[in-house]
Amino acid sequence: MTHAPVEALHDLAHRHLPPDDATRWIGLLAPGLRLAHAGDGPVAGRLGGLPELPPDLPWPAWEGHGPLSHIASLDCAALAAAGDCGLALPDSGTLLFFLHDGRPDGGDSLVHASDPGTRPGARVLHVPAGTPTRPHPAPPGLPPYPEVPLTAQAGMTVPAYDSPSVRAAFGEVVDSREWRHHPVNARAFTTALNGLDVAPGDVGHRLGGHPVPVQGAVEREIAQAVLGLGASWRDRHLDEEASRWVLLAQIDTDYEADMMWGDVGTLYWLIRPADLAAGRFDEASFAWQCC
Image (cartoon, rainbow, N blue to C red; front, top):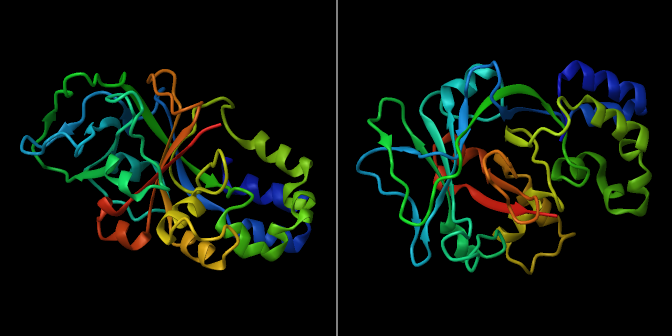
């Protein structure tokens, strides 16, 4: 996912794509926030460390499997101040992300979108502003990840080549052999896109916008889990369901935070806009992909 100023993306599309394709492609751009290691900018959240939880709220756990690891805490007010992320997030309070990451049991019970029974192993909590909280001690045997402050930078994001929005905009050609030779996948265009991405090598943490898949559209992976594994990858109902999900947050492998997801993989939390607007963060779905 390229994360760049909208003007630069518009200019690039008009220089490299036929007019009709440029218009369709520009229509797919979506705002999002890049979450980068904190430098001089205001801190908008952090990876790892101890979560700030209300005193009466127990540390999240997956019954029968053990406690979840605290992955990230994000300050909603700071995110709103950073710019448009394309999501109807609360304008205050803190979002906390937890995952049963395999450390308590040596990886015997990992969370997979394809297995609905593992869903309790990933959780998103919103702690409203003004709620009394304290740093919650980590459960025995589950040391916290190193704390890494994050800043947020607004920009426009580009969908993956096989995302539901691309499939809806460009039609059946996406499933054909010709798609790899289509102007939006031409080397000159994709190379120019990659050149727009700021700070090459930055860890790919994101809030909102389009997800960056490691192995195929994340939205379709979630949709297949919702519809059942029998759903064909080319079933139109799969794309219909996939289009109902948006990226909430993406947490990449991060060496400073000592976070390695499989083989240099990425964590994804997706949610339906209606659930997000209603504050039903318990309805978020989780997926992870690795090389």
